[in-house]
Amino acid sequence: MLSKEKDRNLKTFYSTFDEQLSHQHPLFKLANLIDWQSFEEHFNHLYSKKKGRPSKRIRLMCGLLILKHVRNVSDESIVEQWSENAYYQYFCGEISFTPNQPCNSTELVHFRKRIGEKGVELILKESIRVCKANNDKDQNNSGTAFIDSTVQEKNITFPTDAKLLKKIIKKCLEIDKKESLPIRQTYTFNLKKLFRDQRFRNHPKNRKKARRADRKLKSIAGRLVRELERNLGHGSSYQALIDFYKKVLSQTKKSKDKIYSLHEPETECISKGKDYKKYEFGNKVSIIRTASGLIIGALSFRKEYDGHTIGTALEQVKNLIGEYPTLLAGDRGYRGLKQYKETKIVIPGVPLKRDSRYQREKKRKLFRSRAAIEPTIGHLKSDHRLNRNFYKGLFGDAINIMLAAAAYNFKRAMNALQLYTFLILKSYFTKNISIFKNVQFLNKNIRLSNI
Image (tube, rainbow, N blue to C red):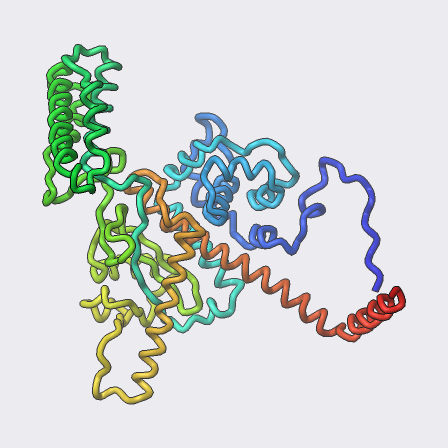
């Protein structure tokens, strides 16, 4: 059949995105599926009606947050890309192309703090609703869910005592300079020599020299902290910081609640038994996934035993989807709890003698299905910013996992919409296969005649 004539008329600056963009694009479709009005209703009360500078639109800020984790970019990058991408602008509620940046990247930080954990949980809830509304497998879920835990690492370097001591010395010297305080010695020359001695510490010939340099560095850090406290006097504005430095200097190898980072003191040291990574520094997160692949629970913890996190994780699932799953399968790390309210909890173990062959095969099939949560965690880490948590503090730990889970669900919905379009085209081509065969035959004859 002949193709339709294209409209050659020049489009004005006032033409809308509906006339310019492809209606088959996944972002275009997803923008029309999300209930943006629910965000407006829940976040309106967070703004004053009369005081302060006019804020950015709520849909714009929510859209930027979603796009950031869907596309796995930073605050600065998503703001820059927004001004170049028409589909991003349509997703955030614009009606025509705008070449300017929508806001400063720091405004996303303020917006996250404004909506809090409850607001981010609402975005996750909406992602679940969108997936269920457009996928029969998610809608007709049998009530079976799978749970697993992982570590989201904080944005810190691998912690060592030497690194912490160097930072304390640097901060003390900066405060002395800022407050114009008298100081006996800056140790500039001595520190350079000590830093050289600490290099290549794993070589047998350098081990004693490096340990001696560590002790000397700790002595210098202690002197500077005590001298700073004497010069400032007790009860100064820096007293809390000085006490914090003293705690770092006093901790030993076997101390409890150790501090691994000066700018992220809440960071935990967690060992998950991996050969390639013995220790991870961040916090533990729990993820609950349905049999069809939808994430219905994502929650942050510190370093609790996995079995003790089940109750809190299931309460979040109840809040998000309105019911508890009937069956929850986990690995052996969740041993201990067998039942939580309406949910039965099962873990792999030795088959019971009284089980029939059918029951044993059913259990094997269930735990083989449970293993599918591992690639889900892999996608969260590699594609949706769970691998490295750049948000600050305990609040950042809590919202990063929920935003990553929401982005995973939205991306899943986009893939389903793309597949739906492909199947429609495929069915159309299948119905008209005779036409395409005639065209292929004609092309073949033309090529032969050219020869």
